[in-house]
Image 1: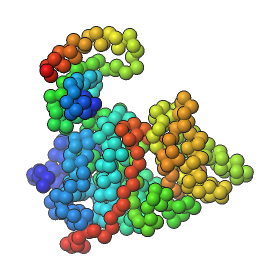
Image 2: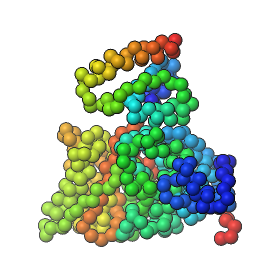
Image 3: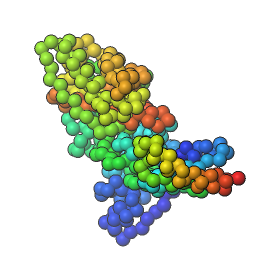
Image 4: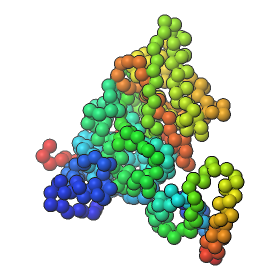
Length: 74
Length: 336
């Protein structure tokens, strides 16, 4: 979330990818930086270390949502 | 001014503070306005004076808010110079406080006090200095934790994501035993004067005890001790062995310090020897510089020293920060 905020502060469109387990922390960080509406997309937890095949499956599921979130920033 | 809560008595106030998540789970001293005012006077600056921001909430840490934390922790006014210096240290960007509070790793500030402030504030350096029984050590460390909770906004599971945490997250504070150390003090090695008072603060894992019995061959024995300290700092599961490039703390107890001194070692040769021997899992040097090994002389007599691996992450790899303890700033406190 912090990375997405830092990118957004440079006026570059950004979408945070946040896993289920860290969703509440993402909300907290976004609010504490005064940017509660930073776009974010929910991923299943865990995602790290689950292998490239699983990453591909998850990416296919959320790609459209990420694109939609970016489109909303236009 | 901080927000005021109202309660019928102190027991009700304590329950309310627990309900609001403002405590560390243990009872606190209720921070009534008169108690907080006494702490502010002990700092010697206006209550609204801003010391910095604490992440991840980016809360503004004023003298008054830090005084609230100190009252809750059970501090005496005499402790405030060290509390203020430690708070300034953790808010230094190199400390990576916001990232450290939010990580899943178990990391907590370790506060090391040097110079005359040790005696003025009564910070213990010998037996059990990191355990129960020493008021200044316990309450100063706890004050910083309560500020991290209430100003920095760290709450378990939402903004403090430590998977388990550890006892040191309630507070870790000790003094260096300069009087019995054969080495120059830590703060002198970090560029401060011997008569200055400092705190050095670094985020650490729980300590790992390092057992060593001396042998009859002094050279062999001291080399074995340095090998053991370096190996313990880079045990396979530590971030120092996994990520590398961070810092770590070695607390050398008097028997081990004496052995190393007899073998001709001083502070800089110990840090260099440990850095030279410490490697990551994939064989890289675990430390970028000999300065990344922070050596402290403390503890009681016996066969165990301590090592504290660190998180080794954040924008600055959660580096140790040293700040001067300003003595003599306090205003007169009524009734003392």
